[in-house]
Structure formats: structure tokens, C-alpha cells
Length: 403
Image 1 (cartoon, one colour):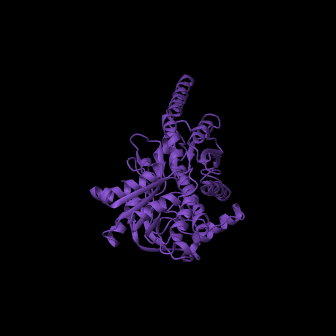
Image 2 (cartoon, rainbow, N blue to C red):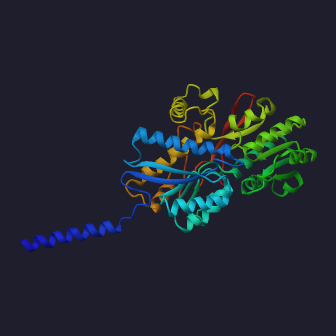
Image 3 (cartoon, one colour):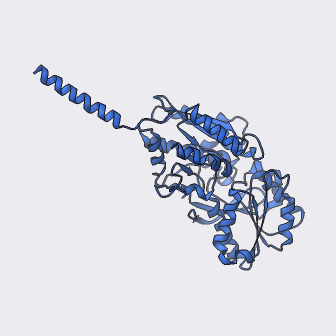
């Protein structure tokens, strides 16, 4: 009897050992009490206005940890490093976070060029590069870069929507595109080409600028001289404000579309002069906290309360903070779905397994969906028009794809 019990206990122990060895190991940075993640953010440099997003991430993670005790008992800790929007610095920072700080994943880093600089390194090392703050279409390339996923609607889809609207309302339009000279700007040009097809070269004139340029005055004058009566701007807030002022000063009145990453009140519309862009068009997927339509919205009231407590003195009207809330809640949902399997492989698997996820920061009706063959979580947007005081949405939600 004693020998039989011993054999049974040994068998049980072996089964348990086998189960333990078969279970995936948690990612580096995961302990019983903490989930360590990293990101790059331009707190300095030419697009430092976007550093607001990183400040928002830190604040909303702090709020979530305080309110809910973290995810499944583990508090999230974010290392947010300044890369100055410099791709070389992004790679240097990322290697440090992965190899020295041992983060579980990279989250919410901003910029197309900067995220491109680290994509191969992270994919080669099978480190999730999740919910990037860039709408580049290429983040949907799950076949070649299965460890990389964006969060926002794509620049390419946004440009397709603008081009279709222009052709609907100005059938014979000559379209000007003023774009940042990198992958960010190129996606907008590609989106317009998708719609115009073989008419692109005949009906579209393109001018580009470098992020190191002092102003965009010269390309604005070039595009006005082309005779274009519609304009799509694809750039960052500093240059967006410059473009608005210059277009107003020279009296050019094209049908004007501004990319939706450069329409925040504090970083673009107010510096440009709110009266100088009346009638300008753009699109949205997040609620605009400065819009009176959301004044009594419970979710927006909660958002404002969080900003007041965790970022004292910050303007809650900047929708970049609203986006940062949505991004943090998306990450939280993925970590919840992971349960107790916080291996990098399962984190990525759950990121590609979001179904009709509603977020308090998004416009009603907009939900997030992903799959192993769909790495574009947000695909719906709504057009809006600037009235001199705020953005006024109109029309139905528009659904697009990544190409």
C-alpha cells in the first residue's frame, strides 16, 4: 500500500511538472504584482505637441491602477522615454527598454518614422509593438510583421474619404496635397491615388515639406499657384497651424481638409487663429472633449475628472488626452483577456482577438475589431467641419479598410 501511494504521488508530481513546463512563461517585466511596459514619445523636438499623448498614457495608467488595482492584481508600470521624434533615438531607447529594463512590450509610441525604425528589431525579438500612435497603413502587415499593431484609423483610409467627398461636391476639382515628406505624408497621397486612379496625375498636384523646414509658406504658395480648388493637408500641428495662417493671409479659399491628428484646439486651432479656418473639414473617431455636445456626457465628465486629478493644470479639451484614455483601456482589455498567461505570444494573440470593443472615449457606434488577419482596430470615422469655435460633426459614420 505504501509503495502504491508513493507511485501515485510520483505520477501526480510528474503530471504537474509536465503541465508547468508546457505552460508558456510570462513575458519579461511580468511579476506577481507588476506589468512593465515601455514607449517612445516626442517630449522634445519638432512635434513635442504630441508629447501630450504620453503624459495622458501615464496619467490614465495611474488612474486605472488606483481605481482597479491593476489588471488581475498586477499594476501596470510605463517607462515613457523621450526620443525627440528621432528614429535613431527611438531605436536606442527601445533596445534599452527591452534589453536592460526588460519590458514586456512596447505600447503607444508615436510617429511613423520612429516606429518604423524599431519595427524590425521588435519583430525579430518577438516583442509586441502594440497600439502605435500612427495611422500608417503598413502597420496592418500581419504577414511580415506579426508583432506590430496600430490603434487609430489609417491615414490612407482617411485620405480616401476626403478624396471621395471632394469628387462628390466638386466633380471637376483640381486637388492639392500638402504632405510631410515621409511615410506619414505618403499614405495620404496613396489614399488620394486610390480614389483618382489614372486621373491622379492629371488632377492632383503634390507639394511636400521636411520636418526640419522652418515653415510651409513656400509649398502653400506653390499649390495656390497651381490653380487647385481643393486641398488636403497631411502633417503635424506646428505646420498645420502655419498652413492655416498662410492660406488665410493670401486669401486662398480651397475646399480644405485637415488631417485628424492635427486638429486639437490647443496645439493647432487656437495657435492658428480660430477664425482663420472657418469651414475647414476633417474627421473624427474620438469624442472631442471641447465640444458642447459632450458637456453632460457621463463618460466625458469622468474623463475630465481624471485629467483634473492626475494632470493638474492640463487642458482637458485636447483630444490627444482623450485618445490616450482609449489606448490605455484597449491595452487593459488585451491584458484582461490574457488571464494568467502573460507570455508575449498570448499578449499578441489577444491583441488580435478584439470583438466589438466599445470605449468611453470613442464616438457612439464606433467599436474596435481585430483578428489574426486584421491589424487595424479602428475603421470608422465621421466627417466634421470647423465653425470658428469647435468641430461640428455631420453625416453618418464612414467605414473603411486599410487599403
